[in-house]
Length: 489
Image 1 (spheres, rainbow, N blue to C red):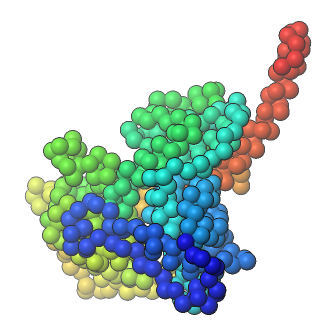
Image 2 (spheres, rainbow, N blue to C red; image 1 turned 120 degrees about the horizontal axis):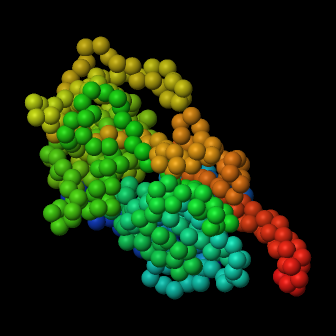
Image 3 (cartoon, rainbow, N blue to C red; image 1 turned 180 degrees about the vertical axis):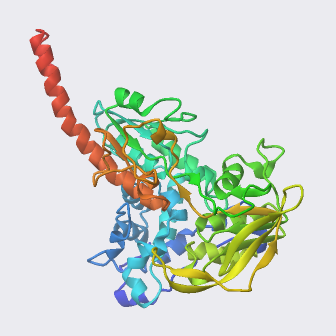
């Protein structure tokens, strides 16, 4: 805690504080968390770097609109409980976003301090406050009167959980239906323990349950219940099932033994704890030489996981260069430190195998970057005569996901695009009245925080919808009861 406010000059002299990490050699064989977290002393020093701008552009970069200057100001004053109240009022899952949100391209990218140096470490401070709150009581939610309205949320991922928390805070009774045996969605099955421990996710879930959110797992909408069943039993429905159907490259050899989609590979390890086989029931290959095809966060997660399973060589194969890697800079840096190999500007042509149909290598060609393609990125062009084979015994394909048709195929009246994504208007409303949708199932594969942003925004429109329809419903009830001589409602 400071005795007096620092001047702008004093703040500008403070360097950005680095996140402490565990030893690279030790952590590369362990699933313990890589980032250790700020101490209170480090957090105070970093918070003092904030200039408390009159026009807080950093907030513009946050999809859930956290009041960043206010919670940082409370850290500087030493009132961590007040900082927690501010943070939790805007963000339903701050311990998650403090770990996996790409702040460097969002809030921190718009931080004024970043114009002439390093931006304030907003994400690290968010994590610090969220972790502090886990061990300290703080009142982050005011009691509200029940609205009498019921909302079903399909999917207990970041978007669904955020919407559930926001709706519960507005007094609505919320039930979340999750297909898997644990809530969290991609937070539980897709992000490894060394980046986001499952206990952190479960703590966030328990806090939502304390608000009154009901979560039912092992319920597959489209099989266990239909969308029509939920429409009949709830006043509104929010669909946030993500886009979890894995994509492949459509190259020869993808059916060989030893080839995984990143979804299956990470789900077996993260959610089903196959790293503990035979104590866990779901095995996964502990390859000695593992090739992961792709350059996004999921690819980096998979290749770092392979090292922790004992791989002697764990290699990223990506068809563009290092500057074009879509993964977070911090995660790429951690992968470098841990010994991950990068084969960049290399494009896979086929996966090769032996007579027993086990993987033996990935046939590739070197590339050079040409003119931008439809995505705006420079198109990889094969270099003639550069074909070669990267030997390996396991291949993980991490080239993206698309919409799973399970729910939509069972709901033929629900409008979808030609790629299977739900169509929703600016409010998040689908073509079915009272049915809303957001996150990856609408926008396509994206980040955790963008799904959360959708969940928060659409929870507001669902609340408006419930209040608007309540007038119609209540008016109808009064008329019916009056006609039947039952008095006023």
